[in-house]
Image 1 (tube, rainbow, N blue to C red):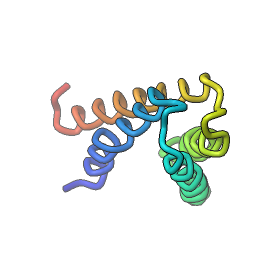
Image 2 (image 1 turned 90 degrees about the vertical axis):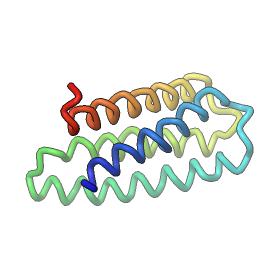
Image 3 (image 1 turned 120 degrees about the vertical axis):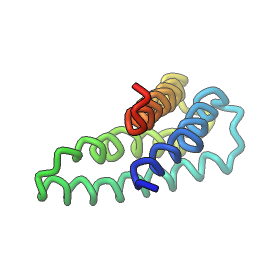
Image 4 (image 1 turned 135 degrees about the vertical axis):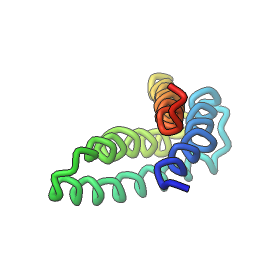
Length: 117
């Protein structure tokens, strides 16, 4: 199976539902989820920052994908994880919106890959 298809399915089945759950649950989340968000935020920022650098050097047209994860998703998850139940509602709303955006984008990409559009 194509790597991009696997990434699309991963985001549709796991990432988007997790973000939507976090955005809806807000301060009712278990404490361990906040710790996971901190770790996930750090890992995403570092991994995609490294990938973005390599893609910039290679002049790849896909560097934008890594920049979104490095400059938006990773720091947002870290922020929510650090602030825990004191996180402003607006940050939870941004996680929710990011989840819906990921769901829509990856469903579109999967449909386009299989010529459903």
